[in-house]
Length: 305
Image (tube, helix red, strand yellow):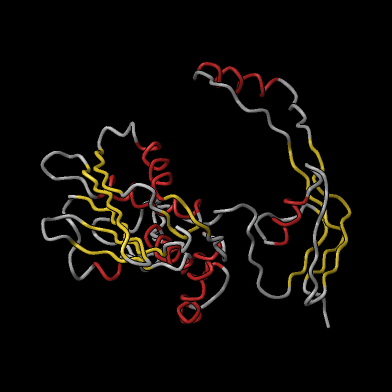
């Protein structure tokens, strides 16, 4: 069987160019005249890679280790066909996908769904293939966004809410009304619960402003009900159309008010929903009778509290 990657006598040479300072038109003209009567300056060159031979068989897992500047990224760019080699050859059999940096290849003006189709097409996948695997791809995004296992323990809800409000206390376009019972404990992961609340507050601040004032009036209410704690985060904005409401927690869904996109990726409320589920709770969204959108979170109460 032929190797999946076969690199022979590979080399990559770059020219070192100094960053050009600001120059006026007269400087450009004078430099052009000088070049006519002066010998050409030799540019400094250096080899990022030289005399590299490497064979990787199908099914092998290989790690490339080296100090900064050793040429690791340059080699990967050549293998990914991002840049050509100066000398030698690189034979690649099969599809190659590169992830040289987190976020590389994602266009900020496209939705998450559109980015998936774009990157899949670049990798040589047909639209039908991408569509078949779309749900699995989205689930992977959500898995990377939050840990698989939430460490549940008794958490004082008052402290978590106070910490989240401290982060937004200087926002001039936001007012908070708080109605939370004292000494209220929930069974949750403290860090994840804080992220959930921060996401909901930011979503309300961006998209739940009262039309008359341009200020987001946000109510946070929490009460104990039997073995559960009911937490509500509600704004007094325009709300959401009933047809759109069931879709707000779907990954990459982009509604007219961009309610799903607290971070611009269309994953905000989808991550909130999945995180609450991982903590053994229930998350739901509803329009209120007097206007605005309400996020309802139902979390377990620890038995010792």
